[in-house]
Image 1 (cartoon, rainbow, N blue to C red):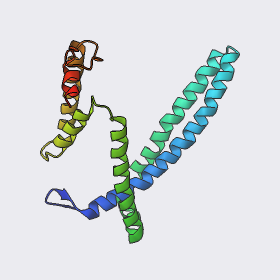
Image 2 (cartoon, helix red, strand yellow):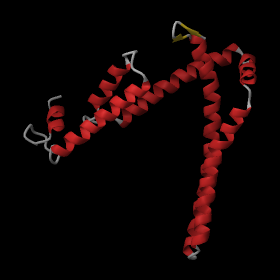
Image 3 (cartoon, rainbow, N blue to C red):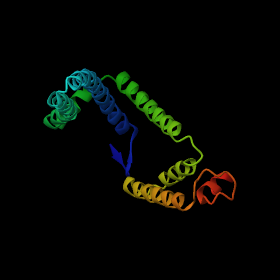
Image 4 (cartoon, helix red, strand yellow):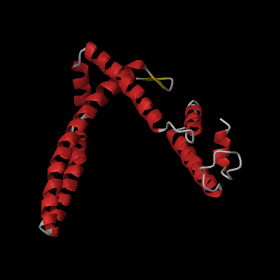
Length: 185
């Protein structure tokens, strides 16, 4: 699956074919647990109206336990299944399904980028977004290195914004160094 340090398209397709069904199952479990949790919130509200704090606590603890089980049960199930059984199951999947999973996986990546861009669509963070893409293109940097660089940039930004005054200026005289730089864009 790995040739010369790079993943082949076959390896990517297998990873996608495995990840998408697991993600769908995870979303299904999340939906069930959150639906039950809504009912528990209503139970806690009714108990709070009666002044029954112990019942409110029980409802919240039960919802918390359900959230934990939502992760723990599938994780234990995956640990219990031998890798050979997973490989055999993936081998039984027809080519058209593997191809569809690969296309779906590529669409998930595109939608993920769109969501990130939508969240970051402010003038203040666009430079950080561009820096992140430029740094990600450097193949010697690991995800840990990129994370450390991101945290360092966040601290630099926070320290500069604290020194810069109110940050709402708009002109180059606002005493906000980051705002002044961004204003020039």
